[in-house]
Length: 508
Image 1 (tube, rainbow, N blue to C red):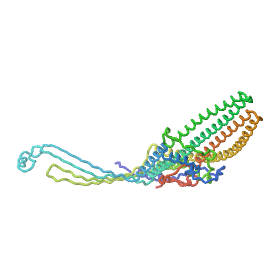
Image 2 (cartoon, helix red, strand yellow; image 1 turned 180 degrees about the vertical axis):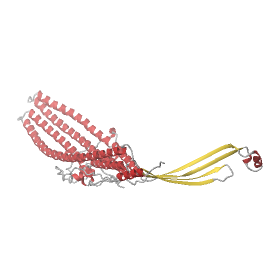
Image 3 (cartoon, rainbow, N blue to C red; image 1 turned 30 degrees about the horizontal axis):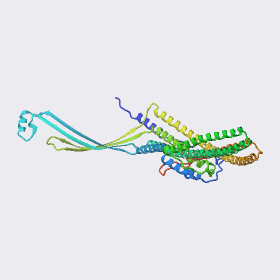
Image 4 (cartoon, rainbow, N blue to C red; image 1 turned 90 degrees about the horizontal axis):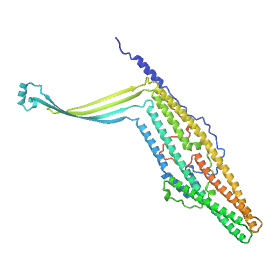
């Protein structure tokens, strides 16, 4: 006689359970050692990096950036993606609770059957007030039932919680993308605004150059009529005037292009948008470098670092979820139902209620390596996320040092170039006086004026570069974004660099 022996199966289940319940600790500590300070961080001004543009003290720039943060279409799309990710996180959390649904059933039946009662009996029954004396009987019935069905899968081993953590960290990463979009938007506005100012100032330089050349042309015409200058002298100046006029026309087009770029970023129709004229100069637009910045607080502010940190935590949660597939799953089902059945007969309606509770358990024994392959995949994904995090940290440290260094060198160069401009102005004044007294040639005057114009253009370009380098510094420092009160980042200031002891443990 053969019979089923449950002992081998039970042994397999117990062994699998004990193996699966072994704790799994994930070391998420970064290998990057932070320096104590940046090499060229010689800032002299305390700056609110959240709204760094306030330190520029330009009301029009502040207005433009605030408009862009409220109306930019790309920023709004990024925010919509964030809301979608948050909704997915809420959906994952909802899986922790039971599912309850209502059931309802309605039935109806109509049947005509041959009466099984004999003829004599039917004749006797026909004298009574009943249809049992009929040759055929109609059996009609109607029923209505309804109830509740519920099911619940308890999260004994953290499978669902790991999925919740993964979705939550994914939403955090989306939030950091939104912060990064704010940061880039504010610096883009300031960059185009600086270009608009640059082209306007360059136009003024061209106009001044044309004015000086016209004055010189009138003087040469007088000397030409007196026989003290040649036609070549006049032609030389007229050529310079034509070149300067053509350059000024190109500058107008470039200024208008920067203006249109700003209009798009603030969500306005380019054809209806005009910036207000300003008397501010690029030389005074850029404030001093921000002070008090350390590698630790910079990396805690950088949205890209914060996003990569969230992706590391998400990858660790996904690995924990994959490992939880080795553990048993329990499911509790409940069905409660009541109803009434009515018969087309002299019998009364029938009422009833029934309930059913079942508990099921599922433990994988053989999956052809599917679960382990998924675990290996998530483990590799986690290692990749950690490496990407370390790379982003190193890149951020380099970005900040490079931005500080560029700002330091540009400010030194600006001081030197400003001194060269001052000397060139004195040379132009001296050469013009010598020419008026007949002690210098026209070539010398033209050369000195062209040299001054070139130095002024270089200084203007340097001021633009200094402004753009400051914007690069703000981006490198992670400035230019504000978090909502309900962003729910859930990230400590320590992160992976200082603390790094975030671990995921699976235990029975």
